[in-house]
Amino acid sequence: MTEPAENGAAIAVVGISCRLPRCTDPESFWRLLSGGEDAVGETPPERWEMAGRGLGEGVSEEDPGAGFGAFLEPDRIAGFDPGFFGISPREAVAMDPQQRLALELGWEALEDAGIAPGAIRGHAAGVFLGAIAGDYANLVQRQGSGSIGRHTVTGLHRSIIANRVSYTLGLTGPSLTVDAAQSASLVAVHLACESLRRGETELALAGGVHLNVDPQGAVGASRFGGLSPDGRCFTFDARANGYVRGEGGGLVLLKPLERARADGDRVYCTIRGSAVNNDGGGAGLTVPSRVAQEQVLDLAYRRAGLDRGDVQYVELHGTGTALGDPTEAAALGAVLGAARDGREPLAVGSAKTNIGHLEGAAGIAGLIKAALAVERREIPASLNFATPNPEIPLDELGLRVQTELGGWPDAARPLVAGVSSFGMGGTNCHLVIAEAPQPAGRASDDGQVPRAEKGCGVESDAPTPLPGQFPLVLSAKTEPALAAQAERLAAHLQANPELGLADVAYSLATTRGRFEHRAVALGSDREETLAALAAIS
Image 1 (cartoon, rainbow, N blue to C red):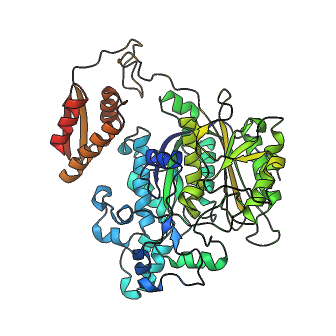
Image 2 (tube, one colour):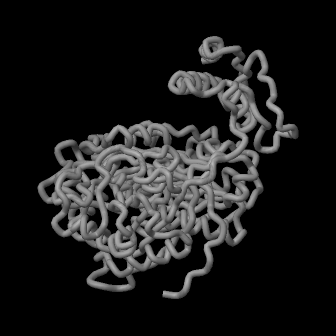
Image 3 (tube, helix red, strand yellow):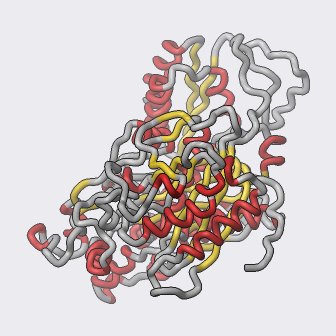
């Protein structure tokens, strides 16, 4: 391997969006993780019907594991609002739902970062999206030439998944769909970080999407030998016999840390270093290489410039396969476990035990889990672990599986974690993340707002007295959407009583788009505000 170049400044994760099984956003994903729940079940009948198979033709004895999965609710795939994005209903029907999901995630990631999507139109912002599946194209092609129309090419071409986001948001930076098999979405994040460090991109959306709308893909994965007949991922467990499929997607919004600090952004975590390589041969095309995994780990931590003994947690690729798990454990033990120097074993776990293997979006799901664990300062349990795989001597390797929700092993030290994702063709990726310094300028405990953030023009450091009433500004493209927004905001306020009305009012006024239908909910306290929102909804 060649000597690595300096990675340069750390990259800040300032926004997160996700749609995952039983999860509509990062908050609900964290509830699933921290509650030790999984979202796996039997394949819904409508998935088989979409593939042209009747209810009695779903799974045969030749397809062990194909009847299980972790799925999005139907309305999370079909419930797209084309008018919001300026797309005609006819074109929306022709679009791969992965394109539609990517649009929604891009918008939500920007809003989560406190950026009105319209404010960055024309900016050199990049879009890096992992996507490897063509299920919707397969379904369309089975219908024959009569299903081909004006929007079929742009609707089904995988490259357009990223390009559609750039076009809709008016972003002029790099825009590419990455296919590196199961490591695609984490490789996309790596490429985004490199683009930011080179200065060709000032802001980047990165992640991946993956939808299993054609269950024939599960049949193929089963006959390949990848799926667990039990429909579960038993990561690092003696029962490990394959993975269960999942679907969904996630994006992170990335900025150089220095700029994020200057902008007063909330920072979930920083990406300190990353690396990508390939097995480059070996026992077989889809057989993982311990040597290559050791090399990608070594390169990522050298680029990060961190002591390997300081790593406290690794989010595994962790598919729960008989060959993959021992290979990954051995590589981790050699590079990170050996650096423990008497410290307790390195904690490891896998989100695949909660939501299945999202394949093209698996890496971003793992990164979001790790980022939330850093921000919340807790590590969720990795499920389905009882007895260690006899091929994985955890004590010798300096590893332990995180089996319950708990604090970080040494919370007094900076929190550092690794995230791994490996493709079946040998493309390996590892990211090193760490907690960020506490941002300055947050609301004070005395109920007053300190000097405003994000350049709102207030120059004094003195607290600003709060107004008598708090205007919550809402806008939408249709009246029903406006009412729905008021309803969601009311539910959010009720679910999060610690939120200050001044902060909510400020965010709504400065970080959201402006649309044709508008309303203002006025209230001097929570009760009045909730009543005003109810009147709008």
